[in-house]
Length: 124
Image (cartoon, rainbow, N blue to C red; front, side, top):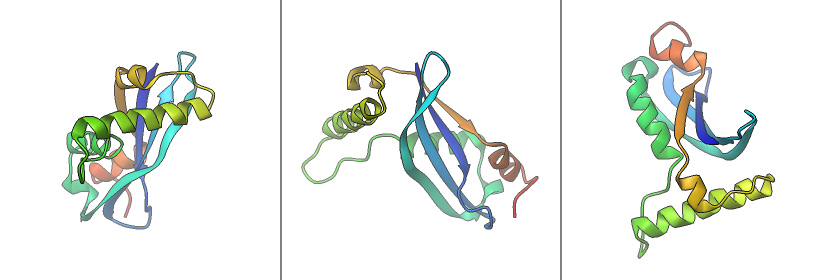
């Protein structure tokens, strides 16, 4: 199993960088089970103003644990995040622990439209 974050264009009408991310667990048979569907980012700059490497870092950041706040530590935030993903997986009939999820490889993939916009070949 692996974690996969798929990055796509959120607002197809805009020339501004606006991405949506879908974090899934890919099972051994290739089936993907969504875990987080409400993540992404926006920018006032154009898609062509960023690199694929920068976008990969941003994608991993926005689907990862949130930054600590209040009295919570980074470790507590991470533990809560992985526990949340464990619950999401179990709700979708995937039996995996938070610890196992945290140890999975994590890949980022981009849609063709994202590639085209970053390379200045497509979009608005």
